[in-house]
Image (cartoon, rainbow, N blue to C red; front, side):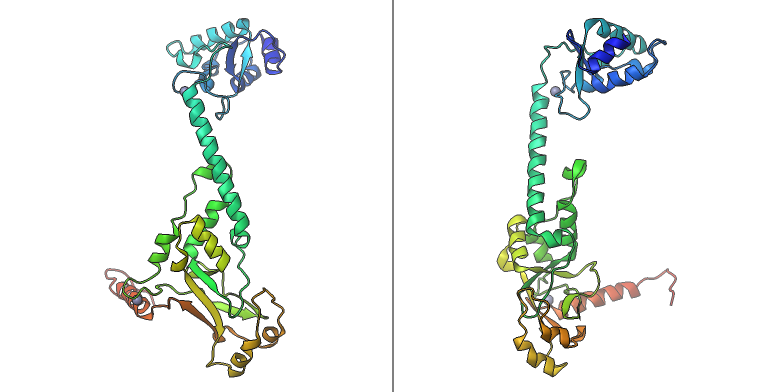
Length: 316
Ligand SMILES: [Zn+2]
Ligand SMILES: [Zn+2]
């Protein structure tokens, strides 16, 4: 029998008439088969049988099968019934001409299609937003138009498009941008309820002060436009931003800033490299503006809540 099973697994069996689970048979071979049948001898077809009692399509996980000759099948079948006599479900008989369950086939190909298209969508977005996808910050320049989106959304998006393998369909999808962009504006004045991340300028390079955990983050105009298409945003409802040098601090810097043209990612522009621009002289102009009223209100509400804590120890 062992030889017969080995032949079947190696594909050298020409008179196979009964299907069994391939992995089940491999396990069976590994066990000492001359001994009395054990618990493990039950269910030679349990993993190739679908919930409708038919032959499970082979592309289903763990459903690989192979044909064995009648003599081996009868041997296996006997043992299986001896171990679990009441339960003949695990021992359904599938002859070589059994058809795969059509219902399960349809379901599986639908899932495969969906997973394929999900993979494609992610792949495409990774290419479109190559820098954002790997978590690099984009090079920022003075006097260029950027867009701001919440960091929380961006990080969710990043997790989503970088998901791979089995959990590809279980990773939480980011919300549409339409709703998200509404959330960061106050109802009263339609201005910004959140602030952009702090920027620093070091050796002529403008970048976020620290790796952000919240707040609004800078993306390029083309990233914004693609995000709108991909994630249901409205282009005109975007929050744009421009980085300028402040006029109040370092007047001479502001004067010279007119000839700073570094929109083409030309980061070696001498003006900026040589001038000691510090973060205090960088000003972010947003449209719509930041709503200091509502942010102030929000902050004082939060402060009040903290002060109202009672029945708690206070540490100073
Ligand atoms: Zn089925
Ligand atoms: Zn407001």
